[in-house]
Image (cartoon, rainbow over all chains, first blue to last red; front, side, top):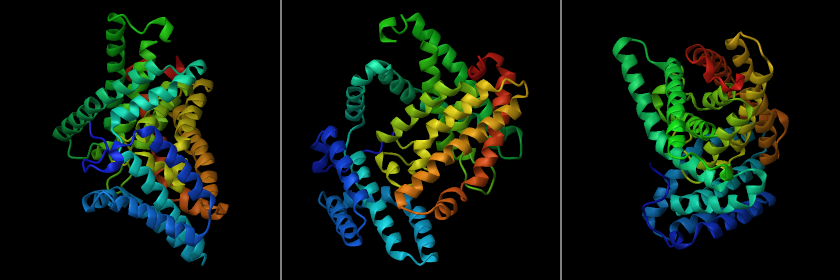
Length: 203
Length: 182
């Protein structure tokens, strides 16, 4: 399973994810509470500096992760150009890029297993509200195990459609794919029960 | 118990698969993916609570850094745009769609599921996404409607109709699989 963790190592990789998430939260609150164009420009320059510090390769891989933002930048830019309120448009765009870039930075420099461990730890106090950390961990594991299976089955369905029809597969393939997911769920649940199931105290 | 957990995990995986397999583009020529249809299906097939949990699991995995959103996007960054209200609205959309499905006990599944998908996947979703956009960009309703609602509306209506037919197809093939009606 691919994750978005950067293969280009940086000093940020050594910081545990907990403090990084906390700092990200604080930074986002500050970014969203100050609507000043100079502050936002300096903030963005600072964020770009954070990306440049580990080196050029890290910087470019960071830019690649930011690239999907361009349609949003374009929409905000067009609207504010249309209403002739460019300054607030620029503030929104700068703030959006900084916030997304900082969040991406945390994602790029945190190992998936460390983050899953963090999520399970954070979920523990919610036990009294019915959120069981073990069940959450089991669900994440099952998801990661079954996503490639579903993608593969989806690909096979598309192929078999193609071999029978000249028209593209489209939405009709979703019905058998969802059916496969439902049937798999039945079998996997049975297999879990056969192996002792989930203990009642974990429910 | 086991089945609930497994089916929630598998439907979360189904939402991802619908966004990741590019061949699921719904109508040729228009680049809309089936991912938000997956959200609607979670509600119409699994019902309100299970549907919302499947979507929450999906969002959690996006947030911790798996590239699961359509186009291979993911990570915390996707929650930082003014359009993130759509992501935050997804669980409510699935919940509302499931609730309509559970309460409206007509046998005309394509109609009920289609309406549930519209109510949840469009009604509930935009009720969260549009105000979120307005707060995030300090904009007025007119801007939010033009920039956050209009571009997605035609695709979402189409997906809701398809979600109705797909739910009906599932109900026909596996009558007991429709947990929203169990």
